[in-house]
Amino acid sequence: MFAHHHHPAAVILASGEDSLTYLQSQWSSQLDRQGENQASYGLRLNRKGRILADGFILRKDDENFLVVSYDCPSSTLIELLEENVVADDVEFEDRTEKCEIISLWGGNYDAIRSHYAFTPPKENAFVVTEFGLIFWGRKTKPPNIDILADEEQVEALGKFVESATRADALAMVDSNSLALARVASGMPAIPVEMGPTELPQECGLEDGAVDFDKGCYLGQEVMARIHSMGQVQRILLPAIIKKESPESLPAELFLGEKKAGELKSYFSHESEISGSGMVLVRRNLLPEIRAKGLSFLPSNEPQLFIK
Image 1 (cartoon, one colour):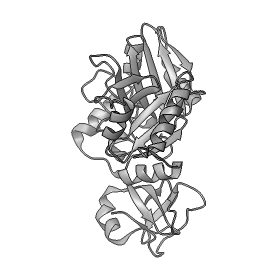
Image 2 (tube, rainbow, N blue to C red):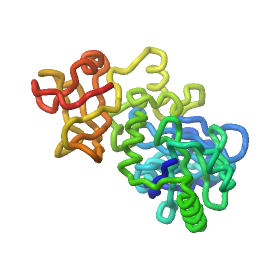
Image 3 (spheres, rainbow, N blue to C red):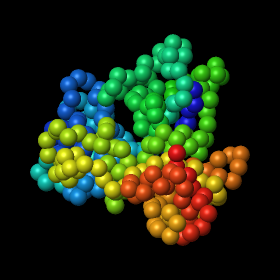
């Protein structure tokens, strides 16, 4: 099993009597589930349904929630969360600085569980341990496991990782390895690959990150309209790029003379001059794109290929 140690971009404590109802109105996923230690991945959308931020909301109790995001800066997320507070009893506290995450993927969790009292969480839940909060992540498919440790748990988390690594239960890898695994799984990074000009349906996030049955929330009308009327016009997919990274991203992509999409990200392969990345392309051109590939200049030889 592989593991990567990283720092979340945001860990925010939301607290107060109105925390649940307020967050429910701001987040695209269902937060009001029965039971303790509930976990929900969702999005903060604008009123046009575009993606502004993403994150996990870990419900500690009815008045205390942790909002955890891989890539959305805490300052940006707090600003978004506070944007619609009027008379609501809810406060947001930045706890990012001393928190750490270990992401685990690509192996059998039973080996970890049997040797280290490691309990994988149930769906939409998290487990409390001495070395952190354990919940299902959004880095890979099948889902990876994330362990979030605060300042008091970091030392215990380090001992767990050290012991599991010595026993060959874990293999520590770098951020590029995790990024390649994520891209191969087709999982979007927000806001790096999908942001304020894109919709959740364009990157497959309507399944698992958008609840179509809950009450009102920002962007709900657009989500319901797209859900009832059919598919969107663009789609985010993983691709293989047979060249070095472009000088800047996003980079335009062409099908012959026709602009067909954008390369959103690039992660290098170790053994050759090539990489993998996420591309946002026009859905109606997808059969032709799969057959011919895409180029970075009009009418050039194809250098990017989608399976």
